[in-house]
Length: 306
Length: 63
Image: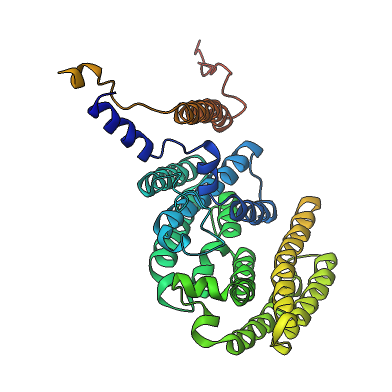
């Protein structure tokens, strides 16, 4: 083989021609996307008024693609720190299967397409909210807050809290108190959820140089903040019932789930040493996912039988 | 001279060719899905009376 051919073959090896469909799918952060779709669906179902099922499906699809696009842009920007963390080093970019530039273009195209589709086929307000969500997650959170402040996930949580508002706006063309309550619920839920994880992955975050609360303010302060946010979260979870927006079933379940959340957070606050401390953080993290899922599942159920 | 004659451009490995084929197939499926979706959304947006012929307005004849 000639020198020229060898050189070209080497270049072909260097190109990320090995990326499979599953790698591009992974760029969309499918687990985050499923939570986004679920909460957006709750916004769509609970909104007053009718939406044609096909248009409702388009709205959900656009919200899902938009969330995935934001995930791809996040992976492009954070490829350097993803490579330093155990939890993320197998992602397509740090693993070398997808070139950073490809992920960026992929994310930008999907962002533009999802916003345009949602704005033109469903509603302008919903499209604008999706554009703001993608911008907030990719630029405000990923590019700025994440590496700058331990309040990163507190403020950045707004991006994850917006999908039910977008779903609501897709049906009504407006935003009212109920979707804003759902927004507040996810917004206040985010810090205790992520700080429980941050307590467990403190070394990972330290290696990556991300100023998570346990790394900056210490474990004790983090446990205190988790408890304070949980104290705010429990009544907020009951608020939709207290304000007459839901039925008794949601009211009862939200009280029980909120009380359990407080118990788990109290355990995290109390147990500060050794394996027991780690176990309580693990329990809170797992329970926080279940808590949000169950609350939204009841909201969805009540909305469907209305 | 020989080097130029044997130059076949970028040579992909079998694995890369397989990946490219799978990616192309996925793009084709997504595009087909979008064509169908836009067609269905257009019909939905036009509404149930889209297929009906518009009746000419009645003209009253003054005798």
